[in-house]
Length: 405
Ligand SMILES: *Cc1c(COP(=O)(O)O)cnc(C)c1O
Image 1 (tube, rainbow, N blue to C red):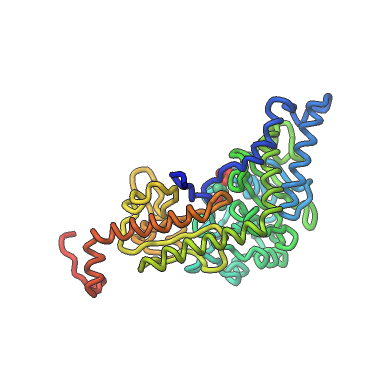
Image 2: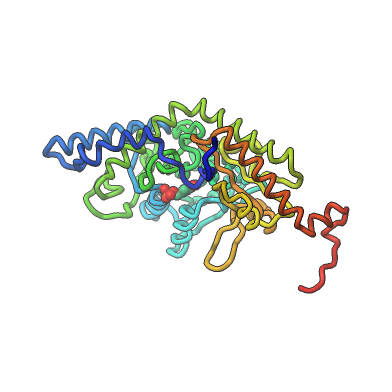
């Protein structure tokens, strides 16, 4: 028996793995020390747990534990990376390069820096969501201090060519930050092989708790320095003051260790389930288009647009399935996703898009249920759609003269 509703929104957040919760529990009521307390065993135990977690986090991305700065999540990690570099390297230059499909936690810090006198180049993407490496290279000037390009996109799953970006940045002597929230634990990540200087990740996107994240900060070749955002006790090599959230950090460490161990098998499983979902839907419905890259994408992500249906109706029609739509509710109006817009997807198809985020706890039975549910809902909406009827009658809708504006 399948239990409803079905959670298929793992790009938004993930369920905590019970093994993660288990590992966190002792650090609430038994070993509740402050990791900065040097005078007693409570502090030492907490510190040991944190250092162990730092090892686990570092191992997932090929870094030394000393290069891991613990934060409250990826929004903080991205802010610290971008504003921290901007503050520290301002004398060297004032130019930052990013890309139009980044998460707001990258775009908005860049916007703030722009108001503070920095110059920001926001690279466009092609219809798959990929940046052009030649365009990146020619955007770099002697004033450029940082390139911030995400590893995997949270809406469409497209994987940017991180290793190639890293090579260009190395050659040009520019720091490379990547928001790897969606990639960490889902695809192999290696800060050395990919030439990454700063990397953001967060526990709650990889089956860990909300409110804990990390920033990788390279310590040699080059040694990256950051202007701190928070002033205080000088924790985390002075880059991030504040008492360490020991249970959360332990949870993040366990989440990284599990992801690292299970990645090869799990990514294949998700890949197959995602393809099953895609084929199941598109073999039974016409006018279904894929958003993002057909192959260079996250294994668990599927973003589809459905022609001749209206987005809100579709979401209502599959209300037993928790997914995200391509419309973002901004104050009063429904805005189509800026990511889909950047790919050149029209407003209509952006509004009728659905992001399916499959994860560790997604089963084949759930996928089959979702296929049937989506097919049923889309057919139902199209049965009532005059546009679809006209289309089926062979009328070219682009030539129709509509009256009454
Ligand atoms: C979720 C997400 C973030 C924000 O992470 P928080 O830990 O929730 O602050 C940043 N970037 C990407 C790509 C994300 O998917």
